[in-house]
Length: 116
Image (cartoon, rainbow, N blue to C red; front, side, top):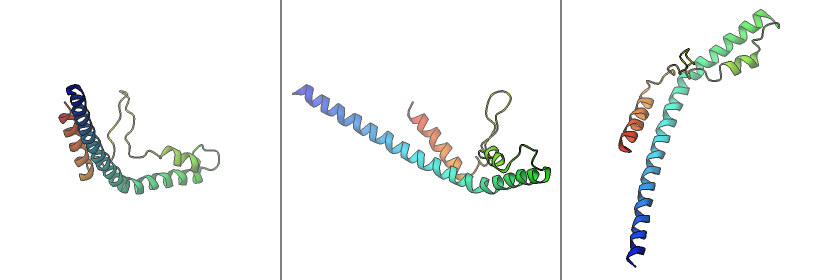
């Protein structure tokens, strides 16, 4: 009987920890979504302008260029995400300093510290 009670107590403990981790992950996912939404509001008009400039250059240069409107869309689909740098890393993303993003990064850092 004692073994069954210990197993039950252990199961409850594991469930509580799992629920806490799951709730923390949900909060982090929501903060990350808010960050990405805020970044997209800022980046979208810049991306649109870059695509328009690319298409305009295609139209000026004529049909012999490889910068078709479709290729312009494809090229700029990840605009603002940071370029690959020659050392193999990733450059800084645009608008990572928005308050929504800073809140997410702080919460993410705190959750990593708490899990150690």
